[in-house]
Length: 108
Length: 211
Image: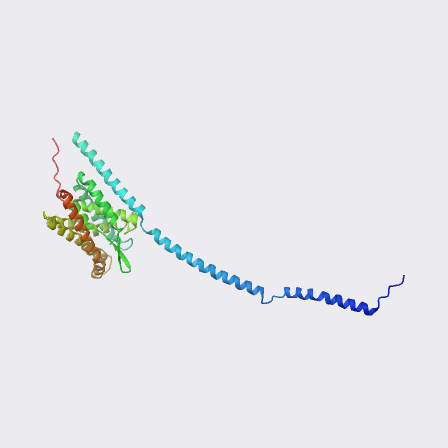
C-alpha cells in the first residue's frame, strides 16, 4: 500500500504546533515547583503573627491566674463562719464539762 | 500585728509558748462557768474583727481590738480569749504563723490584761466616765501591742526603736478607730446591761467543799 503523502512541510508545521501547545502547561507546572516569594512566604508570615498573638494571650491568661490565686488566698466568709463555729463549739464543750463537774460535785 | 513563721528565733518562740501557756492556765482557772457565753461571743468578735481592713497608703491594716476584749472580759478571761482568737486566725486566715502563736499571744494578750485593769480602775459609775475609760482602754491596747511587737522583734535582731516607730505610726489610725469603737460598744453596754461590765473579781473565791 502506498503511504498517503503528507507533505513534509505540513508535518513540520503540525509538529511545531503540537510542541507549542505543550509548552504553556510545562511553564505553569514550572511556576508551581519554584519556591517563589508569593504564597509560601505569606503563610510563614501568617504563622509568625498567629504565634505572637497566642503568646500575648498566654501572657494575659498567666496574669489572670496570678490575680485569681491572690484572691483565692484571701480569707472568705467560709473561714469566718468556720472560726465562729469552732469558738462556740469549744466554749460549749467547756460549759458542758464544767456543768457536769458541778453536777457531780453537787451530788456529792 | 502578727508575727509570721520564721521570723523569731527558736528560743524566743519556745519561751513565748511557755509564758503564753502559763498565762492560759492561769486564765482558765479563773473563768466562771456563767461567763462562758460572753467569753465565746467576745472571742468570736475579736477573731472576726481582723477582717475589717483600713486602707493605709499602699497596704492596709486591720482592727485588732485587744483593748476592747480586755475591757469587756476583765483580766481573768481576756488572755485565753485572745489566745483562742489568735489560734483560729492563724489557722483559718493565715494571720501570723503557728510557731509564733505563743509570741503573738503575748503581744496581744498582755495588753488585753493590762487594759482590763486600766478599764476597771478608770471606769466610774457614770456613762461619761465609762465611755472615756473605754476609749482610753481601746487605744492603749493597740499602743501596748505595738510596743510588745517591737520587743519581740528586738529579740529577733531588729532594732527596737525602728520597729516601734514603724508599727506605731502605721497603727495610729487603728488606735483612733479602736478607741472610738470601744467607746461606742462600752457606752451601749453600759446603757443596756451594766452588770456585764462588773465581771467577777480577779481572785475567784473558792467555795469550801461541803464536809
